[in-house]
Length: 328
Image 1 (cartoon, one colour):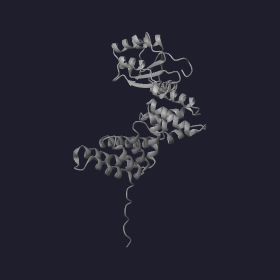
Image 2 (tube, rainbow, N blue to C red):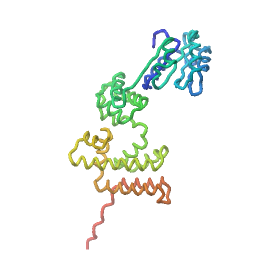
Image 3 (cartoon, one colour):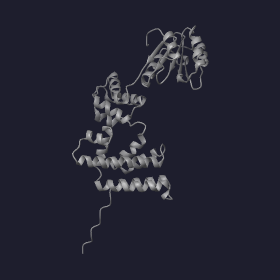
Image 4 (cartoon, helix red, strand yellow):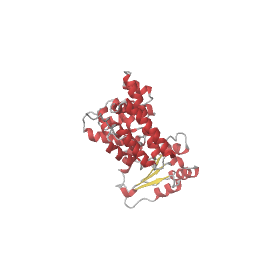
């Protein structure tokens, strides 16, 4: 697409959003910024897209062309597709209409029309249990020497959002500078995905870092209700306690992850957290978090935010040492 003659229409389909974005960047590079118009099918009709193609800009690229990008064309109705079909019967020279949909449109009128008059580019990512293979391929594409375990750790940490994954892969590539990247590097550098704020809270608790915990709580409260944060922490503490018991039985991290129905990376984190708390402290923390649950649900006159902060302090700081009897 970077040097070939451009076609009047392209249809980008599939779930691999980063590849959509790369294809769009390559197209944009063929036009001047004033010659690119971005539309959304949520508000723009097929007739609107046609009108944009017909309005060749005065300050186009070197060829005087125009690029019109329409996102979400799976929303379009028959009348919209008919308008585009009529236009493509006699398209404006130099105008490129690029239609984008996150998903498949195989066998649809729009897909057939695009294949006939231009090109359909379908990019899919593997199913979630094979997403690490996609991540590994993306790392390799950027020249990063990484093993499959590093790619697997990246997916476990970031999640299945391919745009977020692509961003983290680019960050790793910039950091690596040609050096090999392993699981440890990923765990230290990559940012957790959608639950980043809640993740930071549980990790600070696990590190027994009270200042970091209170800071993470403040940020997390901007995104989640206290009840949800309390439930998340209680769930994590429960997994830490269960993982601790299984580790005492001699099970490996992978075996513990299987028993607890967790991925290996969060299981490893839970076991690291377990090293900082005794069995008794974890049991007491679970009791205190159950009290927090009741308080948030109405057993306390204090605000839910204040009750959460009080509980976080209680379950994180070490217990005060018992006072010995004064010497006679």
